[in-house]
Length: 200
Image (cartoon, rainbow, N blue to C red; front, side, top):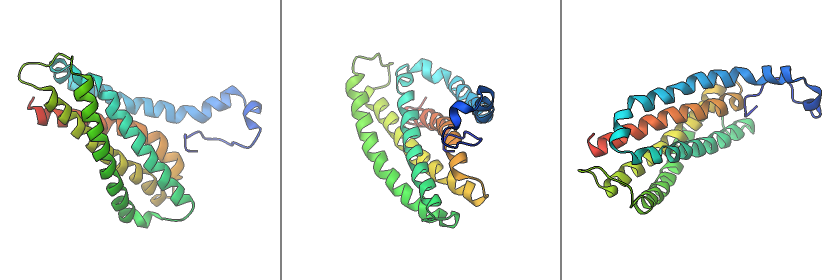
């Protein structure tokens, strides 16, 4: 369910189930999310001039999306488990968000510091356009990563809690939608933050 695969999944059913049935169990979410994922390409295209101006930004896009995906998935997993075990309900939304934002803030500080160091020391040989410095670019990316961690954590908590509120299965809703949504928001956060910090 956490991978949004529909149908029955009794023990021993895998080999007995035809490829067509497996296909039908998976295709809806895969196609829907592929269509939604095309927004990521549109966002990158809209910031093409920024990427052309400072090519180093393209190198760290995967780091931003990976950080968001990992933290969002961790949060969603914890929240779905708590919902299933009835430790929380959708009525605990603000208590859960408060707790997760505090956790995310701590993670954001640690990951931002590490990413700043990684960029500043590993990219020393990179070509930096006139008027910019590697230290400032590193800081902009690090701040964007921190914001992405907090944003992804909030999304990771909101999706399953919202699904539970609407009487949907939180495990089915949270995981497949999470990665795509976090990628889209992460790219927006990344480029917007970098442009504000660097004045481009």
